[in-house]
Image (cartoon, rainbow, N blue to C red; front, side, top):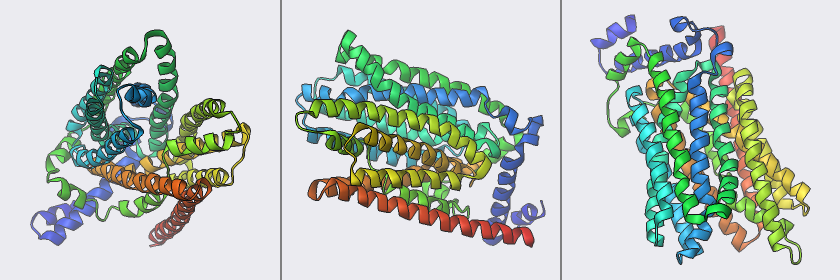
Length: 452
């Protein structure tokens, strides 16, 4: 209180000290908010209807757009589009996702905006995704895909900030584990549902129907937003009014939060996190014996579904371990799983059991890493800066994923598959080393502060 009072009549230095103390106090509130408003301990109250709603939101949304993603290559070909056109559409759309996450982050710092941002983003994603089934030209597909993926990126910081506000600090891992599980499970359900519907009603009707799960996602996120609003206090509302400034100003306030140190291992990890299409390509190549192209493709499709299922199951367990042992430990497990998986893809087993094990191991890796990344950002910041933090995470992931897929794709084409996966494995090793070094220095700093 003294620091806050003196900050009102002092210069920039005093204001900076006041900000630092306010962030520290808000962090402390996050850690001990089980005592706030009479809430019981996190162990008995973390799985609230709001947390379940966010998990359902990710399940519905991912089911919808994965239905269209599974059909998009063949649909685009039927419109006269080429593989190059598909690559341009997907690459540009993915880039827009990263850009809109950065733009949406600071806006999501204000809790009152989160419901509108998340609900509107899910609604626009659903409508634009389903409308692809009505297109008659490749350029129309490109525009709608870009709109859908832009909305998808814009809503993400708001959704993640909403989720983080629903539980206290000691339950962040389990909450984000539920969200990640829903997302990965949707990647299993979507293609399977699309495959069943296309046989019954055809491609275009299936793509149009894909809007329905997306619309359910827009409804589900509303339940989570209402619970978050009930949990807010008068102090939270006053803090919201104090937060202002443009995009650069909001990101500037992240300095001194320690977020940059947490993003270093994440960036290294993402620089090795190659696209699923590269995994599928390598798996098909390894299983492709004489005259067995179709069989190999069918087998790898099933193995990729197992990869996503493993990620969904792992996300829940990873969340529990995160809350008990820490996000850096879980991040290390995820990086190690990917390192082993990539080395295996590089050396190359030629039977479905060996290749399947590598796909599943990769699924375990992404289930651990994605959950840990979200918690590392969420627990580093007060609620009024979490949106910007998740925007910074989105930019880090987008840059890393672009580097990983582009370089690995070039190496795969110009040299070989083993070299491409060896390159990706090297990034995972660097992520492990950086995470271990930062974990050691963080632990030493905490011990020194405890002794002082």
